[in-house]
Length: 137
Ligand SMILES: [Zn+2]
Ligand SMILES: [Zn+2]
Image 1 (cartoon, rainbow, N blue to C red):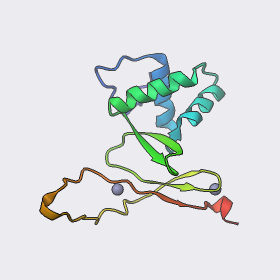
Image 2: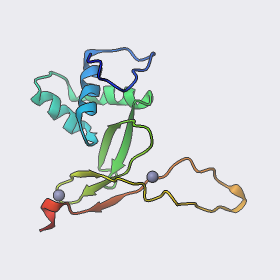
Image 3: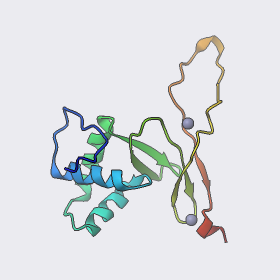
Image 4: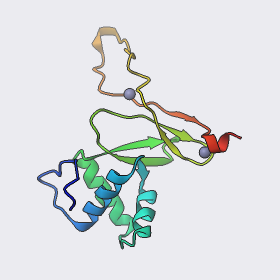
């Protein structure tokens, strides 16, 4: 494994070849990827890995907090991204399903009010969609 990996490998997660190649791919990617994209990227690189293995690896990563899972486009697509510090939001092009990472959190000033402190807010989801530059015209 390259030492450039800036993500700490959890102590209780066994290093396997398929886990390492999936993690490396996620790290080299500049945008979150769906499981299908991960699979086809690995296939392009000549790695022999089953789609079911990709899902299993991703599930293990999500469980260990290494990777975050975000559903977009009415839950039609699930995206996987390395768990960078802080959370991220994504916008989706409804034309080509390209994922565009938002540079800010539009909810930064969002302070929902509840009667009697009915809820302690842990997080939020934001869904933004539109047409990317390619699909606009
Ligand atoms: Zn598009
Ligand atoms: Zn946010």
